Amino acid sequence: MHLMHGTKHEAYSRYVGRKAAMLMLAGVLLALVSLISISKGAANLPIQEVAKALLGYDVAKRYELIVWNIRLPQVLAAIVAGAGLSLSGAVMQSVLRNPLGSPFTLGISHAAAFGAAFAVMILGSGTMASSQVGAITLSNPYLTTGMAFIFSMAASGLIVGISRMRGATPEIMVLCGVALGALFTAGTMFLQFFADDVQLAAMVFWTFGDVGRASWSELGVLSFITITASAYFLINSWNYNAVDAGDETARGLGVRVQRVRIWGMLVSSLVTAAAVAFLGIIGFVGLVCPHMVRRMIGGDNRFLLPASMLLGAILLLASDTVARLLLAPHLLPVSILTAFMGAPVFLALIIRGYAK
Image (cartoon, rainbow, N blue to C red):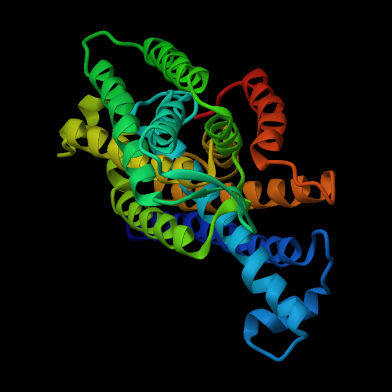
């Protein structure tokens, strides 16, 4: 009996060790991609000079300016947004027990985009101006984030309400998300129809997801929201594992299923609202990354959630780097590239079959 217990303990230790090693490998890969991303662009910088600038050593003033004022905020915005969107998608798929759950497919991104567009046009939180972070400058990013959050809450509240209906299937929830996406897209188009030239240009440009427009102050708000939400999700990873096993099983283990589900949706919506409000719509990251991670590392949320954050950060950062170089010196919004990449990857996952 003692020998059997020891064998099980060793097997569990190996299981945890493998997962931890994969997380460490992903962290190292993220650091390498970050260095490469900072060094590449309209002006290519030697990687050793980038490392020196980041570590505080004396480098040419031009290198220091490019690294700290232009490239680093963009790289950090891609890391934070990719991690937040991927994590939100993983949590939504878990609490809704729906493989198609993500901020984009459930209409929450569209709802947040409508709220932000409403703030930009009606409440005057966005103005057209030329700056190093983009052609639109949000004069009141907190108002924009707040409006995006309110509308995303409305969308997520409806999804949660449907998930509590007796007999509601995952297909019904996804169809509801499609309907919500169409509704809020129509609302955004309605605002655009009555906008003047400057407002229309600002709204259209804003909807292109682009991590290059984030300034240090906006990055600080987005990072605080994402880090706080990540801590909450990781603390609740055991609860999400229980919910994955079924509502009745989770209740039998003492999990307050409805509370976990509602708060999971609310916090996911907050992360999505912040990312969309500051950076625009970036699709497919929250949908595809959790599925890719689940195939590599399994469905245990203790490892799935941090791995989803790392892969989401790597994927969005790599996509932004490619988008920056593809049409250089012109900048291609990263959301266009993630959609082109995400759709075929997701179709391939569907063809191969969804593995829980």
